Length: 127
Image 1 (cartoon, rainbow, N blue to C red):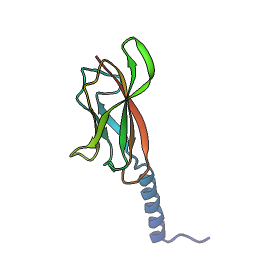
Image 2 (image 1 turned 180 degrees about the vertical axis):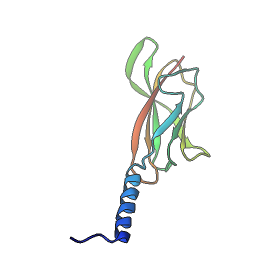
Image 3 (image 1 turned 90 degrees about the vertical axis):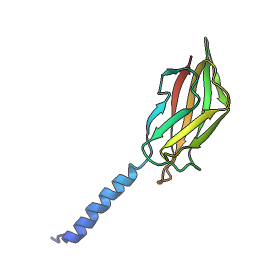
Image 4 (image 1 turned 120 degrees about the vertical axis):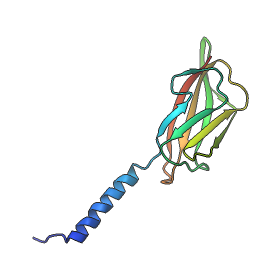
């Protein structure tokens, strides 16, 4: 029986650890403002905070109104500017006009240095 030399075993072990950490190196949404399911009084902007630095040219978001008081409807796009901030883990969605009462959904796409896109959404209400 042939034994693996200690140096080779260490290299194999470290390679496995590195690969597993790279495989999990996707950005995760840590928080949002307004938070998921919360009610807010016309937020001036929506903030999304991720676990990793974002590659802004490949990351983005859409703001949609999904319900008006008393009636659901097909998602309607809301004009908004998407930008990064001084913290590279944060994405801002700034509506072009004040949001009216209703339910809104932000559909986001986050890409970090591993270039693998992650998508998700956040829903909130405006009083």
